[in-house]
Length: 455
Image (cartoon, rainbow, N blue to C red; front, side, top):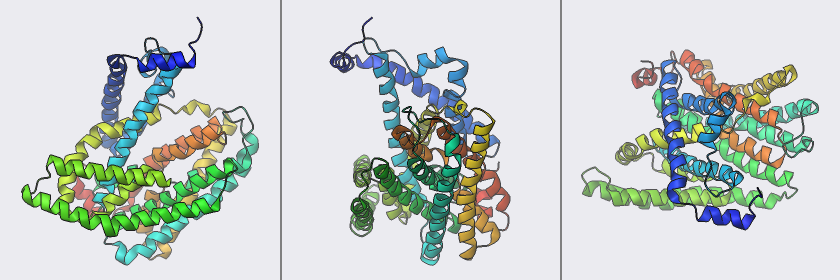
């Protein structure tokens, strides 16, 4: 049977019956949400945050387990056939649908995380946050680059079949080592009840700075790999980001505060449909702005939430409106469907597993060690420094954005991609147990006890 031409394939997709497309999407959503919720509950029973269970659910549903044990069933569910549409086109369309849903979930989550944090502590400890952030970038960058040089001779060709360029791999590995997963870290803090503590505010701010710098570095590294590096464009990106933050803080914030306070007063403490719609529109515009700048849409959402975090009544009403749907629907799609794209079996043989161990050790030494040292020299106790370090060491699936770009550019081979995924999972799973051990005698002990997480 002859393959359809591109115009024929596009025509078939354009004229596809909506119900035929909706049916497999609904099946996938039902399975993803059910399995993610199951593993979230199981994770809580063993002392892990819900996000960890949802990440593991994604890995188990993907080619690493379910796709490996039951390939035909997995293909029926996650690579369904669409009548008249070439299978390759259908396989490309479904992930895009779910990744759009996942990104929307991240935008709402980052807004809620920004809204939930108490940043008044930074008036006294802002310098500490910047010091921690600096070490959380500088040391991982240096160690990641050095590790790439050591392991490069042992690696296979890239996904394009060509040898992996050392410079490109070193740059991408360095950036991957420096990432902190704000969405999962923020969600962990909220579940543990420590999101409005001094340590929570300092850590999330340091993580936000790290990731903002990380995305700028990522854009720069992409330009280097493509031989299109322009220092002027990078400086423009930094300047635009600062200008946007100042605009939100000094122009947009006062307007929104007056408007929403008026709405809350008129509706007796409730946020009506029209004000909620206005908030969502502003949120999307902020996300669009940072996306256009080049530091990803989620940071616009975080900046907006942080700018309004001191509005107590507004914060409580908005969280009540948005939190459940974000937690129950959007986030499982993000965590689970990202896991579906990961193949752990790519790490094969003793040498590759030793390299995988080196990747994990280097990641922990750079991020946990670097941030812990900076916190200690900033005046925090040893326990507090350890808490900050282990929280900053949380990578999770935000890192997949970095390594997916590297994989697509041909500078990260499949084996290193899988290693970095395993590193991201390991550094996330270890966060809560270590933090719970270090909590005694610190300011987070009471909030964690009161949160109900330990029940």
